[in-house]
Image 1 (spheres, rainbow, N blue to C red):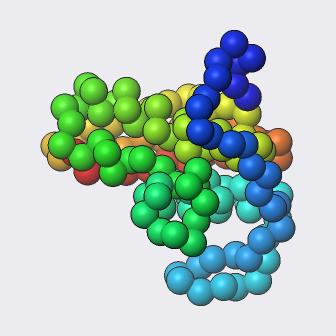
Image 2: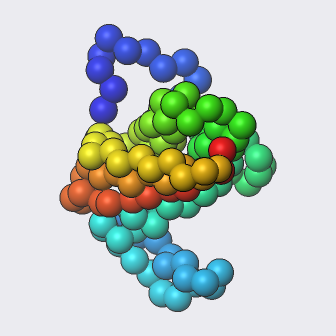
Length: 129
């Protein structure tokens, strides 16, 4: 939830379905709902570059590819910002906490907890530097 004093230009909050298809190894294998559906949605949103595929809304996806080539210290700041902006477009997500960011040579891995309407979800993402 964004503070009332903070305005975000050009970002709309969407309600995503909690009953959806389960995606495994590039195939559909039944349906999932609740916390499992939100966890899958989080991974999908983080893995899709924002504005790259016309099938997705302009607010769907992340800007993580913009981190490539940045210094590790600056990349950590951007990573938190981009992950937060990406996930907060889903109205089921209220906060992202417990950040753990590890930088190894040309790669940065972040693990974090996403506070959702269905419970806490541990998620992670990896970015090339």
